[in-house]
Image (cartoon, rainbow, N blue to C red; front, side, top):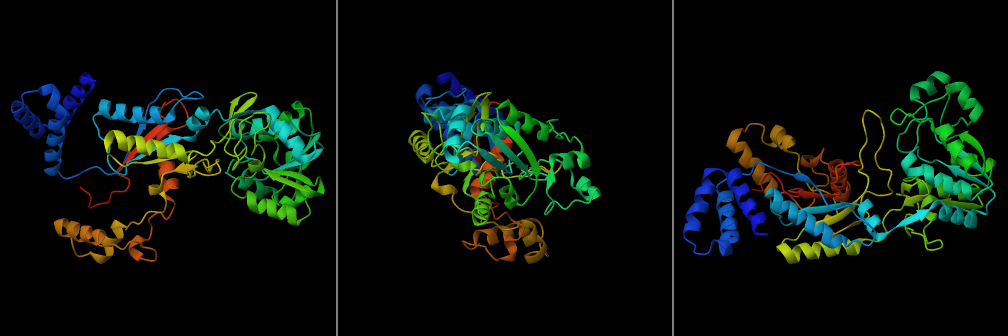
Length: 449
């Protein structure tokens, strides 16, 4: 431990230059016991250094490496240890209102929240009767939906698969809008059979995965032992011409789709949030989201969205406070709420960005637009006078800027959606090995030094 903190002192000296180096040497010479007093000296030196320096850095997002998580692991200990070890290694410290975030994946893994395709099949068969079912509006994803589709098909004799077009709910294209326009098709009203679709558009492979999802999903259903009929339509009522028993697989519009189907005469309607919303023969489950937010784990098993984890984020908050004296915020995050401008795909395939967070992350930002102030309120000022005027305006701002022109163009979204999106971009979804993210300075503004 001594060597770790000694390296932190060395790191601080190298980063801070002559001022703090001279201060450290002066104060250490005044103390008899180096081993006992170096922490106090370092903190004192850094405080004096900061008081003489103007802050130049705003929000910082750091990916934090941690061990590979397995079922039963103590996430509170792992997360806190990983953050504090990173701080010691990299020479930074925690502050009040820092945000520690962790992916929903490691939370669900630690919970052991897994289920087999057999469990999905059993739940579907029990709830919809095992005959002909409609499966409508799924997203086009090997990771997110394909294995769920397999389980659903195993619980039915026939599946009428109705795909939205030209793209799914999150923007994955079956065909382009230009192709639809050229074919003279109105996707809001026209219903296409598989034969009509192939005649008009042929084979269309996904621009990133290279998969023809129409053929891929059809093969999955047949291989699961069910008959398959494929339609293309955007009106949920269309499926009722084929079956009255329906699973609607849309994510963010699911409540409206269920209402429309029930009002139109559907007999049994379940969203993906209602499949595996309770354990089946000891399987994992999610009482609120069911299959929504699940990912492929193996060829026969899915990892579900984590169950209630508010206790976890509160435990981490308490542990950090106990060990550092700092009151941090903590959250669990999944997909970020952003859209790829090139691929036109909306990233949010989870039902929500953050399934659990501490109280300090409730709400939306309350910010002023600096360029608006500079171009309007203080257009005749520059230099230090402009800086001081804007700083004074920020310090005097109201607790709520709703309707104030100085806040136009700021982001009126939930804090958890904004910070969760930042964390998702930081951690990535591949081999970075940083499922924990530390965000610092997010709640600071131009006046904080």
